[in-house]
Length: 194
Image (tube, rainbow, N blue to C red; front, side, top):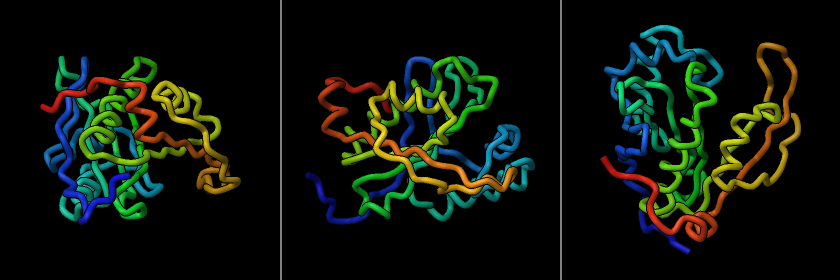
Protein backbone atom coordinates (compact mmCIF):
# COMPACT_ATOMS: atom_id res chain seq x y z
CA UNK A 1 0.00 0.00 0.00
CA UNK A 2 1.21 3.51 -0.79
CA UNK A 3 1.30 6.10 2.01
CA UNK A 4 2.33 9.57 0.81
CA UNK A 5 4.70 11.53 3.06
CA UNK A 6 2.95 14.80 2.33
CA UNK A 7 -0.22 16.12 0.78
CA UNK A 8 -0.63 15.66 -2.95
CA UNK A 9 0.09 18.57 -5.21
CA UNK A 10 -3.36 19.05 -6.61
CA UNK A 11 -2.51 20.31 -10.05
CA UNK A 12 -5.34 19.12 -12.23
CA UNK A 13 -4.19 17.33 -15.37
CA UNK A 14 -4.96 17.99 -19.03
CA UNK A 15 -6.15 14.68 -20.46
CA UNK A 16 -7.24 13.42 -23.84
CA UNK A 17 -9.38 10.50 -24.95
CA UNK A 18 -10.69 9.49 -28.36
CA UNK A 19 -13.43 12.15 -28.66
CA UNK A 20 -12.79 14.38 -25.66
CA UNK A 21 -10.26 16.49 -23.86
CA UNK A 22 -10.37 17.44 -20.22
CA UNK A 23 -8.66 20.41 -18.63
CA UNK A 24 -8.80 22.47 -15.46
CA UNK A 25 -11.38 25.23 -15.42
CA UNK A 26 -10.40 28.90 -15.70
CA UNK A 27 -12.43 32.00 -14.86
CA UNK A 28 -12.88 32.49 -18.61
CA UNK A 29 -15.20 29.47 -18.53
CA UNK A 30 -17.82 31.28 -16.41
CA UNK A 31 -20.05 32.25 -19.33
CA UNK A 32 -20.33 28.71 -20.70
CA UNK A 33 -20.60 27.19 -17.21
CA UNK A 34 -23.62 29.40 -16.50
CA UNK A 35 -25.46 27.65 -19.36
CA UNK A 36 -24.76 24.08 -18.21
CA UNK A 37 -27.62 23.69 -15.67
CA UNK A 38 -25.23 22.62 -12.90
CA UNK A 39 -25.74 22.79 -9.17
CA UNK A 40 -23.20 23.55 -6.48
CA UNK A 41 -23.93 22.88 -2.85
CA UNK A 42 -27.56 22.22 -3.73
CA UNK A 43 -28.08 25.51 -5.56
CA UNK A 44 -28.32 25.93 -9.34
CA UNK A 45 -25.73 27.96 -11.23
CA UNK A 46 -27.80 30.19 -13.50
CA UNK A 47 -25.80 33.42 -13.88
CA UNK A 48 -22.28 34.29 -14.95
CA UNK A 49 -21.70 35.75 -11.47
CA UNK A 50 -22.70 32.47 -9.80
CA UNK A 51 -20.45 30.55 -12.19
CA UNK A 52 -17.53 32.90 -11.46
CA UNK A 53 -18.03 32.42 -7.71
CA UNK A 54 -18.04 28.64 -8.14
CA UNK A 55 -14.97 28.67 -10.42
CA UNK A 56 -13.08 31.07 -8.15
CA UNK A 57 -13.70 28.76 -5.21
CA UNK A 58 -12.33 25.67 -6.98
CA UNK A 59 -9.43 27.52 -8.65
CA UNK A 60 -8.15 29.96 -6.02
CA UNK A 61 -8.84 28.14 -2.81
CA UNK A 62 -7.61 24.83 -4.16
CA UNK A 63 -10.70 22.98 -3.03
CA UNK A 64 -10.10 19.45 -1.92
CA UNK A 65 -9.57 17.73 -5.26
CA UNK A 66 -9.35 17.91 -9.04
CA UNK A 67 -11.95 19.78 -11.13
CA UNK A 68 -11.97 19.42 -14.92
CA UNK A 69 -14.11 20.66 -17.76
CA UNK A 70 -14.93 18.06 -20.42
CA UNK A 71 -14.79 19.36 -24.00
CA UNK A 72 -15.46 17.84 -27.42
CA UNK A 73 -12.15 17.58 -29.29
CA UNK A 74 -13.81 18.34 -32.60
CA UNK A 75 -15.49 21.62 -31.59
CA UNK A 76 -13.88 22.66 -28.24
CA UNK A 77 -17.41 22.80 -26.81
CA UNK A 78 -17.82 22.35 -23.04
CA UNK A 79 -20.20 19.42 -22.50
CA UNK A 80 -19.61 18.42 -18.89
CA UNK A 81 -17.42 18.32 -15.83
CA UNK A 82 -15.45 15.80 -13.78
CA UNK A 83 -14.56 16.13 -10.11
CA UNK A 84 -12.44 14.04 -7.80
CA UNK A 85 -12.91 15.40 -4.31
CA UNK A 86 -12.81 14.79 -0.54
CA UNK A 87 -9.16 13.71 -0.69
CA UNK A 88 -8.36 15.11 2.75
CA UNK A 89 -11.00 12.83 4.27
CA UNK A 90 -8.89 9.84 3.23
CA UNK A 91 -5.31 11.13 3.72
CA UNK A 92 -4.97 11.62 -0.05
CA UNK A 93 -5.30 7.87 -0.66
CA UNK A 94 -8.90 7.86 -1.88
CA UNK A 95 -11.58 10.25 -3.06
CA UNK A 96 -14.99 10.59 -4.63
CA UNK A 97 -15.63 10.69 -8.39
CA UNK A 98 -18.41 13.01 -9.57
CA UNK A 99 -19.49 13.91 -13.08
CA UNK A 100 -22.17 15.92 -14.79
CA UNK A 101 -23.00 16.43 -18.45
CA UNK A 102 -25.36 18.76 -20.23
CA UNK A 103 -28.56 16.90 -21.17
CA UNK A 104 -27.90 17.43 -24.91
CA UNK A 105 -24.97 15.00 -24.53
CA UNK A 106 -26.62 12.25 -22.50
CA UNK A 107 -26.72 8.74 -23.95
CA UNK A 108 -23.71 9.20 -26.22
CA UNK A 109 -21.08 7.49 -24.04
CA UNK A 110 -19.28 10.73 -23.11
CA UNK A 111 -19.61 10.23 -19.33
CA UNK A 112 -18.14 6.72 -19.61
CA UNK A 113 -15.31 7.83 -21.91
CA UNK A 114 -14.32 10.82 -19.80
CA UNK A 115 -14.62 8.98 -16.49
CA UNK A 116 -12.64 5.98 -17.75
CA UNK A 117 -9.80 8.25 -18.85
CA UNK A 118 -9.85 10.18 -15.54
CA UNK A 119 -10.06 7.06 -13.34
CA UNK A 120 -7.12 5.50 -15.19
CA UNK A 121 -5.09 8.67 -14.62
CA UNK A 122 -5.97 8.72 -10.91
CA UNK A 123 -4.96 5.09 -10.39
CA UNK A 124 -1.80 5.12 -12.56
CA UNK A 125 -0.34 8.59 -12.03
CA UNK A 126 -1.77 9.78 -8.71
CA UNK A 127 -1.68 6.22 -7.28
CA UNK A 128 -5.04 6.43 -5.54
CA UNK A 129 -5.92 3.37 -3.47
CA UNK A 130 -9.69 3.64 -3.94
CA UNK A 131 -12.23 5.72 -5.81
CA UNK A 132 -15.78 6.04 -4.52
CA UNK A 133 -18.97 7.42 -6.07
CA UNK A 134 -22.53 8.03 -4.89
CA UNK A 135 -25.76 7.90 -6.88
CA UNK A 136 -29.43 8.44 -6.41
CA UNK A 137 -31.14 5.00 -6.51
CA UNK A 138 -33.12 6.11 -9.58
CA UNK A 139 -30.20 7.54 -11.54
CA UNK A 140 -29.82 4.48 -13.73
CA UNK A 141 -27.68 6.26 -16.33
CA UNK A 142 -25.04 7.19 -13.75
CA UNK A 143 -25.14 3.69 -12.27
CA UNK A 144 -24.60 2.24 -15.75
CA UNK A 145 -21.46 4.38 -16.17
CA UNK A 146 -20.07 3.19 -12.83
CA UNK A 147 -20.89 -0.44 -13.65
CA UNK A 148 -19.09 -0.16 -17.02
CA UNK A 149 -16.02 1.19 -15.20
CA UNK A 150 -16.00 -1.77 -12.81
CA UNK A 151 -17.36 -0.06 -9.68
CA UNK A 152 -19.15 -2.31 -7.19
CA UNK A 153 -22.22 -1.32 -5.20
CA UNK A 154 -20.96 -1.37 -1.61
CA UNK A 155 -23.99 -0.22 0.30
CA UNK A 156 -27.06 1.93 0.65
CA UNK A 157 -27.18 4.93 2.97
CA UNK A 158 -30.86 5.05 3.94
CA UNK A 159 -32.56 8.45 3.73
CA UNK A 160 -29.24 10.31 3.60
CA UNK A 161 -30.16 13.23 1.33
CA UNK A 162 -33.05 15.65 1.61
CA UNK A 163 -34.62 16.49 -1.75
CA UNK A 164 -35.17 20.24 -1.43
CA UNK A 165 -37.88 20.28 -4.10
CA UNK A 166 -40.08 17.57 -2.57
CA UNK A 167 -38.85 17.78 1.04
CA UNK A 168 -38.51 13.97 1.04
CA UNK A 169 -35.47 12.11 2.35
CA UNK A 170 -33.80 9.95 -0.34
CA UNK A 171 -31.49 6.95 -0.15
CA UNK A 172 -27.98 7.08 -1.61
CA UNK A 173 -26.14 4.21 -3.30
CA UNK A 174 -22.45 3.98 -2.40
CA UNK A 175 -20.04 2.58 -4.99
CA UNK A 176 -16.33 1.74 -4.85
CA UNK A 177 -13.42 0.68 -7.04
CA UNK A 178 -9.96 -0.42 -5.88
CA UNK A 179 -6.73 0.37 -7.69
CA UNK A 180 -5.61 -3.28 -7.71
CA UNK A 181 -8.87 -4.35 -9.41
CA UNK A 182 -8.57 -1.60 -12.04
CA UNK A 183 -4.95 -2.44 -12.89
CA UNK A 184 -5.72 -6.16 -13.17
CA UNK A 185 -8.34 -5.38 -15.81
CA UNK A 186 -6.53 -2.55 -17.66
CA UNK A 187 -2.92 -3.42 -18.46
CA UNK A 188 -2.21 -0.34 -20.63
CA UNK A 189 -2.92 3.34 -19.96
CA UNK A 190 -6.28 4.58 -21.25
CA UNK A 191 -5.42 8.29 -21.26
CA UNK A 192 -3.05 10.70 -22.91
CA UNK A 193 -1.65 13.67 -21.04
CA UNK A 194 -2.20 16.72 -23.19
